Amino acid sequence: MADKISLSIAVVAILISAGSLAYTSSVVGGVSTQIDQAKKDLIGQVGSQANQVNSKISPLESSVNTVKQEQTAIRGLVDQRIGGLEKALQEAQTRLAQAEKAAQQSQKELQALQAEKALEEAAKKEKAPIVYGTWDAPDFINIMWPRFRESYPWAPAEARYVEGFAPLRSRFISEYQAGAPTADIIIQPQDAMIGQLKDYFIPFNEMKYKDLYPAELVWPNKDRIVMYTANMNYAVIVYNTNLVKDADVPKGWLDLADSKWKGKVVIHDPRTLAGIISNLLADLQLALGQQRWDAFMKGLAANTGLLTASGTEAYVKVVAGEFPIGVAYINDVLKQKPDTPLKVAWPQNEPKSMSIAIGSYVGIVNKAANPNFAKLWVTWLLSPSGQKALADTGRNPPLPSLDHPRSMSKVIPPGLGIFTVNEDRLKDPNKWAEIYKGYFK
Image (tube, rainbow, N blue to C red; front, side, top):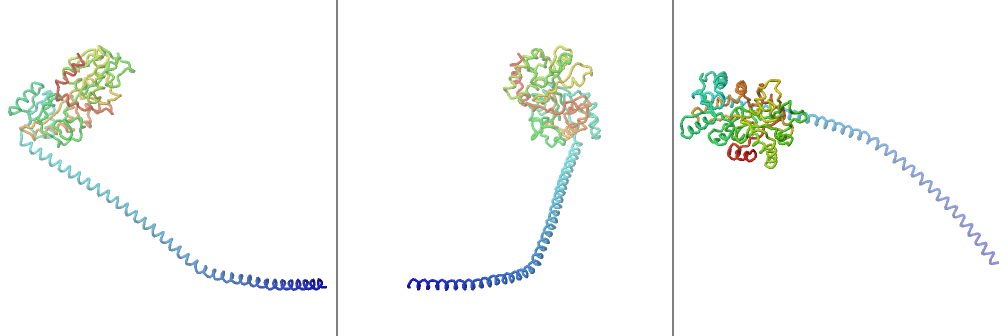
């Protein structure tokens, strides 16, 4: 009985629970629907407001973009204008610098002309300078002086020139030391006298044409010039074309020491210190350094078959076929006939330089009685006009830019330099005579 009552109560409880669940679901479902609807309404309202905001923002963004574009365009225009101004400013500065440089150059040229005119006026008050030189007197009197008078017609018709070598040097030294009248200008070979008498001459750095000459052609150096090269004669390697095959032609100074030429080389005796070869060998010592030079000298001495009394004699021996190679003056080569069986072996290997085998320096004596006239004449001699007159005497002018068949720029192949003069051979000739005697016994 109790079990039936309990079961009935359980059934009733289940029914009541079921009804409550159904009711609750019904209520909850209604609320969810309302929430969803509310969400939709809210979204709609927000979307509407967003559209309204967007409708207001878009014109602003468009305006902002327009402003940015205008700013970019303005900035580009400003940059362009500034760039143009900077370029114009730079161009103006360049033109100004060029104008200032031209003005300075004009001022410099004006000062040079004024100085040249002042020198000429001072020279007019003096006598023609006395020149002691090694050039042939007829060349000086009949060619050099008349050509000088073409530039300076007011100069006296007669030149005052004394020709001579060693005896004339002794005369000059005696006159100088005694304070007696002597030369205003000295033209003498580049030898011991020059080294010993450098204090006898005035510095002449202001010479108008100084910058046209290489440093190797002034003495002692560019900072203090007391003498200029007046004329020069190069030493060259020569060979007999009938005796030397093309493949065997020497390609440089060092080839003179090649053992294949043993006993076959002819050179002027360097022990005499008389020019061509003694100058060359001393300059090579400076270029090679003592160790390499010593090896070269030993080889050259072993190869030398004959020591001659002059460079011209060495040239003649090669032309005659007595020796296949030798060292000679370029002047002898320039004077030879076209069919002469002799050519020059220009240096192709280092050191690729030439030596002034013999040349003359010109200087103004510091006790000159006519110093201004002397300066005027030396300046003319070193000018293109003076160098052309010198070349017309058959001498080799040192001015590199001279357009003349005798100019070394016309004779020597491009790329060859000039050896620096070994001043030690000028200052101490007795020392060098002994050095050469040690190799050529």
